[in-house]
Length: 474
Ligand SMILES: [Zn+2]
Image 1 (spheres, rainbow, N blue to C red):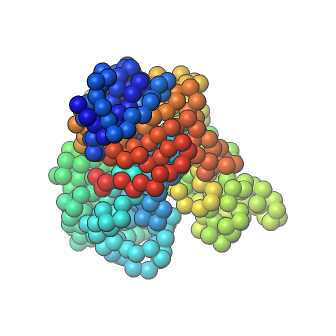
Image 2 (image 1 turned 30 degrees about the horizontal axis):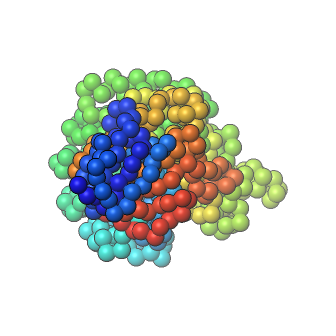
Image 3 (image 1 turned 135 degrees about the vertical axis):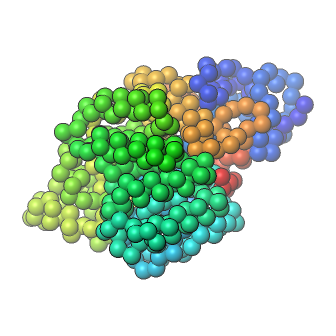
């Protein structure tokens, strides 16, 4: 038997949670064609994987790279950490369908530049990605916030009947064109005035397409309990699966609350479909605003439009240098994004360890000083949390980055190593894998990742991009 590529001598972790096996793996074209003892096989190329783990490429179900896949299609920030598939359009803000003209309200303006072409339909965006593919596979949720910006005349009030009907039609069309679900972000100003009923109307459309309601909930701090209850209600009333994005308990007063929130999720799961993902960091990253900075023990400026030179600096240092208070300094920096130290390590571990939690980066790659999660999330879990801390074993860690997100979001033939699956693969060293970055040097690539294949194409090798851009639109 003959294959294009043989991976010999590695320890294969197949993504299901099953224990690693020392077997060979054969790839032809874009698919895995065999695993097992392939000593009698020949191949165009043989890769010696002795002492290495071979795993399915990681799937990041929560990123904000809607525009980055077009403007920086090499996607080094994802490939370098072993990620081969991403899901865009999160937190209610998708790049498409966008029919609104003029400047975009935040946070859509954080994800999409004013000078970028706008895609009036999801199909137009999808076709553009197919014509000029990035280096990773990508799927996209359709954002309720974006639909609101298109259809609702005044964002500070609930949608009226005609506006809701227009959003329903637009969502239905975008899901027909390949959007993989609905995202909402009632936390953010353009969607804050949306009533629970408005969100239920949207969720009904997702349900009709067999897709999920994925949400950056109305609150992740003092009102996180109420926000969870609202999310469950939306799922029940629309008979729709709900997925809580980047679950956290933000703010000093709420540290420890994950014990309660996870118990609530566990209870709800007995009655309805509820899932969640999280990031392995105690700092969050979003628009700079006073509500958040008051809850944080420290704030780093990630990006400021009027003061780009302030990226990477502490908000309190900037205020001291300007001889002003924190609020005034923040106002001067806007529009801006920040990194907020608002979570407790015990909560981060407890949420990670919960058996239904999927790993995500929640990456926003813009600006010179992003949150380190953009480049380091997956190696951080496999290094810090698996090897150094023992939150779970390596097989479990990989399952939460591969088969679990693939199953949750309906990504077919991805997330597992088995005959017939797409050859999205990562080869790494379990002893040395770690994030290579920190809050001071956030864009340094991860360590310990040897090889990354996307659809059978070698895309990352020995710390560098091969130039391949084999990403499919899922
Ligand atoms: Zn979010």
